[in-house]
Image (tube, rainbow, N blue to C red; front, top):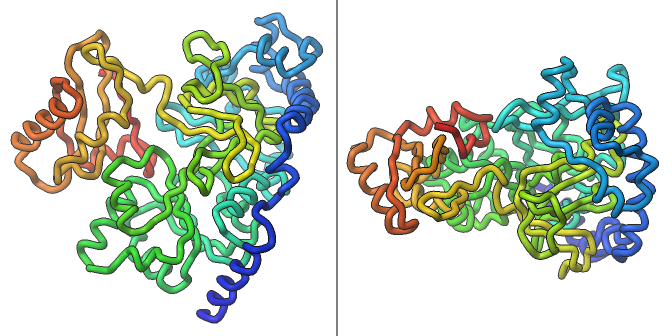
Length: 447
């Protein structure tokens, strides 16, 4: 077994000298050529969606738009109505269609039905005809190659929810999967497996697993930096990594790479150089809008991500408003890749204003992680029905602490770091973790 591992590492070093890109023609394509490819692909998708997808046809008819009205990318962005998650849920409730008026293929042809995690509501169903086609995995091939992964290496895959095949991209690229469930009970097996097989990537860690690994290290004294030393990348998913969590992963010498949804049109990975995640524009037409007006905003600024798939002929979301607030640029990446890059800064519905100060969950994270009992960073912002001049939070804790003392220390930290008064509800970490899928919790709740 060790001989195979050493062979794989040597092969990876040899292959790394061959070329810097998996698909150099596409990855470094000039901007004008990328845009020239997009409209013919977009035209096929919107014609199919208008004919087959009930919600798309309903929205377009209400807006007085037909596919033949769209003669350019600018026409598309100017005339076509947006689709939101609420539109899909409302259509599902009105018609009983579980796919929310998006499906364009016969159900008999489907080979996979998965979905979003549904953290903030009902999940969006995602259907596929072919789990193993080259188009379905091309974005991962490019991302894996960028991260330095090479065929023949081992990859740990951790499944937080049932969301279709997570093995297909690994197998397509030529990685050998080592499979785990998303549960703290797997941590001992994960550590032993990493020691034995020396995987080069782990996908994907989350806040609950990070909590479990930290406790495992305390209980056993095992050096996790050595355990994970073979990993070129550790994929982080579900929600942002808080400041304290990042310091832990840095101590373990993990190269954290975020996995991100691209407007539910696809999934992509953060670039190896950490300058953003690639929005592969041969697969997705990306827009960047003011969340209030719906109008385009300039590259390099904050805006809401809107995505339309260019290769999905099964359940394409047309001009889907992701609610993700992103920084986005189409400038050439230092790596030489020419496709757009983006960084998620928050959710459009996650910003609250307290005493005149705008806040996102990431602003509050350090205050919660500052105390030993709440260092896991599990908290929820409680959004009131009317404006208040204090911050309402539900905060998770571990063990059996002096809750009066913990509350006062947290309030002092919030006052010092944010300049705000607060009202806190303290609950055990396990109670908070029950409120969402296993890898994250809803960060905003209503009073």
